[in-house]
Image 1 (cartoon, rainbow, N blue to C red):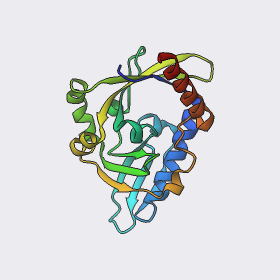
Image 2 (cartoon, rainbow, N blue to C red; image 1 turned 135 degrees about the vertical axis):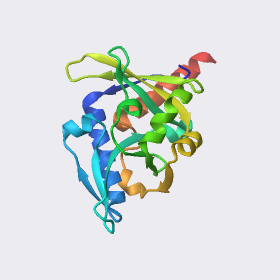
Image 3 (tube, rainbow, N blue to C red; image 1 turned 90 degrees about the horizontal axis):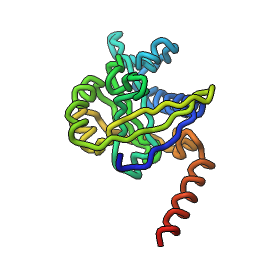
Image 4 (cartoon, rainbow, N blue to C red; image 1 turned 60 degrees about the horizontal axis):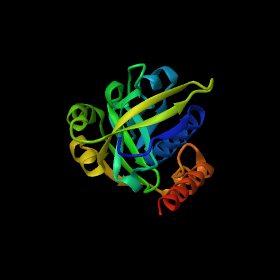
Length: 200
């Protein structure tokens, strides 16, 4: 896979994802009315319905995705399998949202644009870039693996026709450590340091 796989506890990931969604809604609030959708809509990839304040009643469905590794790797994680073994498609294949909001939570950057452009690029990206797996832990302790394409962010934005804009870092404070929080990130760094020492 080319990069270390990570383990995500579902409940933590869900809370972290909601916090990213709140940050995006707050960021968009000066220009858009953002209405959070219920779980049935979210399961179809729609987190919000947004409408311009000065618009003519036009509404757009929006899916929000946060990424805490992008600033380090330079790659967006384009999820093609939410559950690889169960053959459950990821958001880049199954989302019904019209728009995608992709957030670099460390660099405080937002990419916003048409979800369809990203979905249409998945096949080409699968054959051009490496894949990465993430191990997920459900509340009952069961495990499943998600899988995504590591797409260089410049290619992700250009081909996906995603417009980049800065965010207020204060909106994302505390989210930069990922779903596991600072303790998990510190443990990962310690583990990496021990591994480097062992290779000397």
